[in-house]
Amino acid sequence: MKYCGKIIVVLKEGVFDPQGVTICNALHTLGYGEVVGVKTGKFFEVMVEVESLELARKRIQEMCDQLLANPVIERYSFEVEVGK
Amino acid sequence: MKYCGKIIVVLKEGVFDPQGVTICNALHTLGYGEVVGVKTGKFFEVMVEVESLELARKRIQEMCDQLLANPVIERYSFEVEVGK
Image (cartoon, rainbow over all chains, first blue to last red; front, side):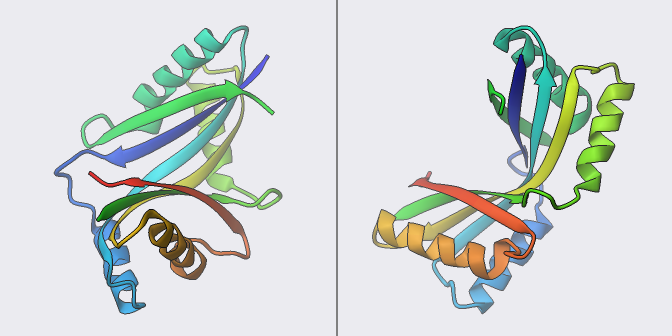
């Protein structure tokens, strides 16, 4: 069965996000003065072929811990759906 | 009132995603043979201070069209919540 994991990785609170600051400034310059802050992150869609939703969740969490997120400065969240 | 827009930007179908291919190969090397595909994208959290949820949605959509996503090769989706 195919499952699709949607993973969002963001910097932990307190870690400086220069890309977010740059985008915030750019939005101000473009006239979006209502913007009070921007955080950036990464998004991954991982398709896996395993027996169960539970196993898909477990394996995707392992992938996040091992490769997709840097636990020192990043935190992640994900959800798993039955794949397309 | 503060609102928080959570935006995901991904490459359109058919646009080559070399970063996704690299991550897929890396996961295979690490023993995750069940992975059949990886897509990569960007994530933005934009905090805005406006009068209504509707206005927040409208302005965030404009920001996506104008700066955050490249409409030629990317598509985006977002949701807006009452901010922290």
